[in-house]
Every structure is written in structure tokens, then in C-alpha cells.
Length: 83
Image (cartoon, rainbow, N blue to C red; front, side, top):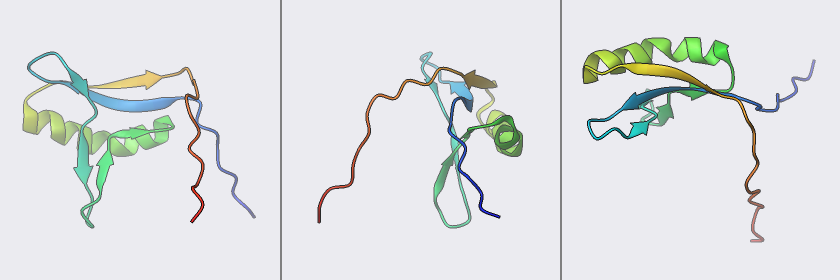
């Protein structure tokens, strides 16, 4: 059975506000050192990331909110350059 990629129509992101009122998406480092932002294309991924979001709230002492972004506007398509 071949799995088909699902078109991303909405995003779920955990968002934290800094002391100056700017919002950002926190990230965590996986076991290989790659930074993983606390966001996903479905609620299932958001639930998987919830423990990391809670750890972020605990560490920062700040509220971390789950936000759903639901309008897709494709702004640009970057094509591969010729080598």
C-alpha cells in the first residue's frame, strides 16, 4: 500500500509570548541535535508535542498557547536550481 502525502491546509502551533510582547514558536532539540519547532499539520501531531510544550511553559514560567492557523496562502514556490 502506498501512502499519499496529505496537503497541509492548516497548522497547529504552540506559541509563547516574550517579555516584550512578541510571539514565537518554541522548539526543542531531538537526540541528534536537530531543532524541532512545536508545530504540526494536524491535531494528532499537536498532541504528540504537548509534553514538550508543557516543559517549555514550566521552564520559562510563561503560558504556552496552542493556536490553529487555518487559511492557506501559497506565497512562493522555490524550484531546484540547475547544478
